Every structure is written in structure tokens, then in C-alpha cells.
Amino acid sequence: MADLDSTYRPELERHLDAGEELRGICVASQQKGLFKGGAAAIGVTDRRLLVQELDRRGRPDGQALSIPPERIAEAKAGGAGGGWGTLESAIADRTAVRLKLRLTDGSKLNLMLMRGEGRVLGGSAAARRSAAA
Image 1 (cartoon, rainbow, N blue to C red):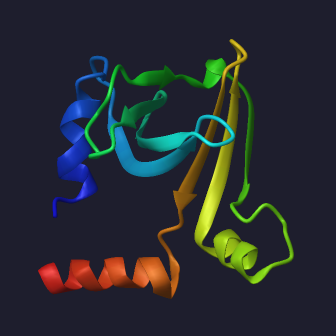
Image 2: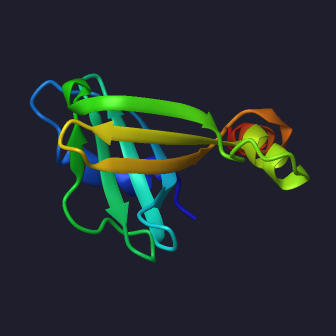
């Protein structure tokens, strides 16, 4: 299976301006409505966020959304468990982050990103990196 960088970097780099640097890539689940969601590749540059929706097979779908800092009216980040007192919520809070963005045009993005540190996720990623070296 290809890694995130080789899978999504070429698509995200197509949207860069001259001199702009793509500093990082991650994939998030994106909540679009109460019962509707999808996935998105997020590119972080030195100037903005690029949010590229993905189809069911993980391929770029449509035009990437460009979000420079001045388009962000409000940003909230927190645990993905929603503060509920359950085991599942505690695990979600520990392993994932929910990022809510409200843009100046009134649109909203609700994204959930997995944390990369720790034994469960980060440890296995580190083991794969050291095994590949």
C-alpha cells in the first residue's frame, strides 16, 4: 500500500502557488451532515490549508478547497469523544482530534484526525519506518 505522501502530494502540489511549500499531509474523516460524511486529504502549506475531498476509493474528488488564515473566522480543536463519560469516548479522545472550522463565508468544516503518537498508532508507524530503513 502506498504511503500518504506518494498518494496525495502530487495532487495537492498542483494547487500550490509559486514559492509555496507543502509542509505536511494528513487524511481526515469529514462530517458533512448528521448522517453524511467522507474523507479528505489535508495539505498544510506555509500559507494555507488545502482540503481535497476524496471519493470512496480514496482518490481526489473535485476541486481542492483553499483556506488561508484570513478565511478562518473560528477554529476549535478537541478530543473526538465529545466529552461523554464512556470508555469509547475516552479512547476516541486519546486517539483522535476533532477540528471544527467556521469560515468567513459562513461555511463549516468538521474534521476528525487520528493522532500519530503513542503506542497504538505512532508506535506502529515508527516500527514500519525503522523496518524500512
